[in-house]
Figure 1 (spheres, rainbow, N blue to C red):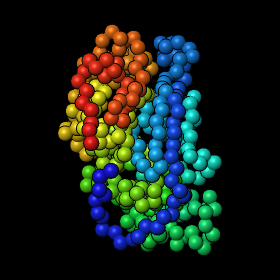
Figure 2 (cartoon, helix red, strand yellow):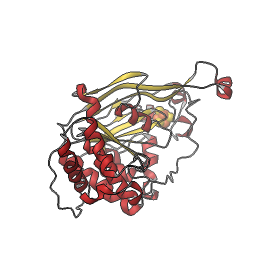
Figure 3 (cartoon, rainbow, N blue to C red):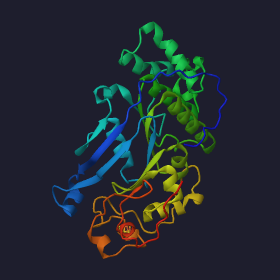
Figure 4 (cartoon, protein in one colour):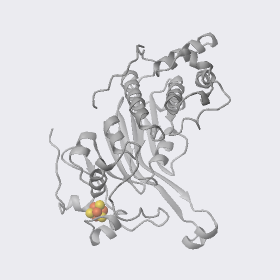
Length: 342
Ligand code: SF4
């Protein structure tokens, strides 16, 4: 991980979280049945959309694993499955200490305003998980709320304010304080900075990284912005139409991308602005998940596709530099592959 940029903040963070945990996601699928009406007529009864289609990955304790991909690739569905907000159709997600899962995973969303009740003072909102889980005696709840506010760069007096009195970046700080209030070991961050102004994004990313390192949190981070992914991640999974195209340590992925989709995403990186507007040069539309292409689902957009690609779905295969790639051309050495050497 890169060095954390310094922010002016005097507070010394104490280790408030539980011991860090690791995660293993094993062949996860999440299929949504297709509804009635036109779609049913077009696709036939009993069809389903494979939002997540056989995904496996591991996150080591205290590290950040990021999922990147265009909208509709399944990364947010996967985030909800890991956070326990939805259940997989098949496969399993195992935590090192699954027994306390409900109390140990917290999620930070893209829109902090939507996750805060506008009628509650934010002190009440931050106190809610502490009271709900009975983590502290009542007399210690508000002191803890004040401590959390200071940890995220706000003032204890801000506990009296309502959400509309804060800027977007401050509201995201409140959301982070609220997530930490539940003493999590595992954070799921779903596009936590993409709704924020460019100038505020770096502050929030720095805050998340600092908290993650100091509290030893394990994180699943979701973004479509490769610059953000590069900054926060230990490992990265590139998703395309519900499947992982490539998984690699961050430096390996950015210095030696192997899957044609990863290569095209990275080719667009200098053109990506920090608001994450996708100016990808990848040709063609993302195919509809309702009717995904046969074989490798990237084949209609891939410059290296051949007949095997149209017929046979590639599986992730381990590479000598620690990455895993799902691509026939990489396996067959039909395209030049750069291996990362440290
Ligand atoms: Fe392209 Fe074929 Fe590799 Fe898919 S399997 S990414 S179509 S070369």
